[in-house]
Length: 116
Length: 120
Image (cartoon, rainbow over all chains, first blue to last red; front, side, top):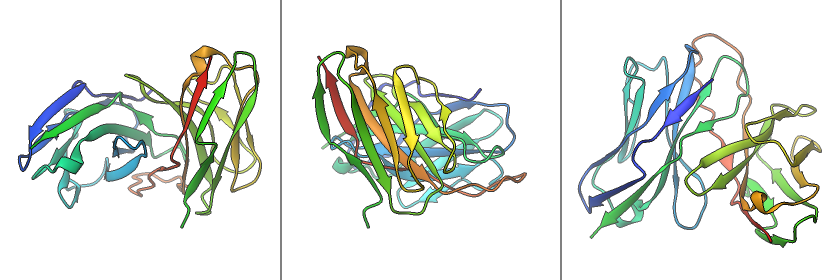
């Protein structure tokens, strides 16, 4: 069974600083995908970034990058140059890619607060 | 571009009442999902439908039923609501993933805006 662990219930970061949100995962499947979602206070779930287990390079999307360390089973989200609008809940999730249309398994989330 | 539409946005039920949460997507996705979100618990899967005509239980299916009405619509029914079902419910959809080794295709879930349900 797949499992996602986010050990930081809450994080604070100063505006314009970088922040790393931790995510570790557990799976026996060799082919899997890792996702990060943002949930602002308005409640919607916003897809941020994706990393496939066979991808050779770390994924990047604008100010978001994913620090993927396969041997350590970690997929940390790095947000550079934090903005006040980055204050939100962040969820790490994964899915098996070998078995067709499997659902995402989510971690419990990290609440990020950006301070001016 | 509507994406995934959920109705209603808010609902208050008394214990024992029934209701159906509606979900529709206009992205021609094969797969649809129902999750619930509770404080400190993340999102937990209730049921999903990998393709039209199929449904499968997730992590927390007890007290719920689902219907994949057609490719666009996937409803969630509470037959006899309980206070433990107070939660925020999210519907999501995604493209089909072909089965192949060394899969690298990215198919994120697209979420609706959620239904906040309170059972008193």
